[in-house]
Image (tube, rainbow, N blue to C red; front, side, top):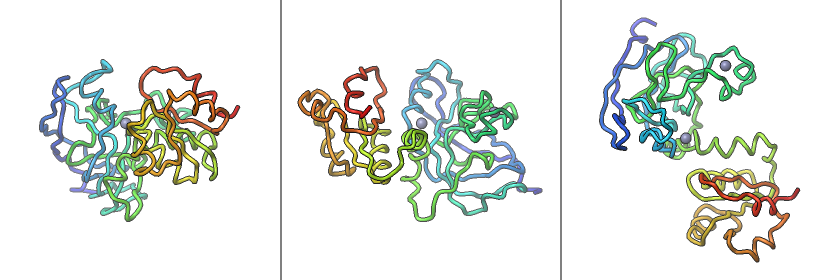
Length: 267
Ligand SMILES: [Zn+2]
Ligand SMILES: [Zn+2]
């Protein structure tokens, strides 16, 4: 593809150390290879994992690091072998940008279980260079790890679907919980819980948000459209709801007992 496949520079917001401060950082993107899509970033969500990685909370951060794995952008050009996308398409990139392609998970479309999967940032690509994420002007990504964003969907609303959205959609899909009319519980109402309410409602479920206080009741019922709100310390209502739910998606990121909630799921 001649000049299309030249290396370009881009500038991102990089963590240089665990301080939590990001600063501009310019680096070279790899060439747009035959299977690659060159994406100009429109916006990028902030996932809590980005915060952990920036601050080296997981003890595995490499700097400089450009975070961002809920990326929405516009296709600027495509490699000669790209069939799924053309220039001008609005696309998304999530937390994985590569895999071995040969192992059982890769051949079963569950690349997330590939031992050689490559994370969107804080990893090393097949060319030996560090991967850098979506808090940047642009990215070059293999077409296999790029998805089309439907026409008419606002970029900033699509972005969080690429990690937080997938996190709740995946268990609903995996456990066969997509049919309309199910009664679901969403435990915790942070970024992922919020997605859980929206996605479960879109599937036609009756959704109960379970939280530790009344603080988020208005947000859950009036803003997000949940059907019911349960405070976990309200033992009377907890008792009333025993055996009342078909599933609970637990989005609480800290240690907590599970037994009180298991009682409310029909066995
Ligand atoms: Zn994430
Ligand atoms: Zn693999």
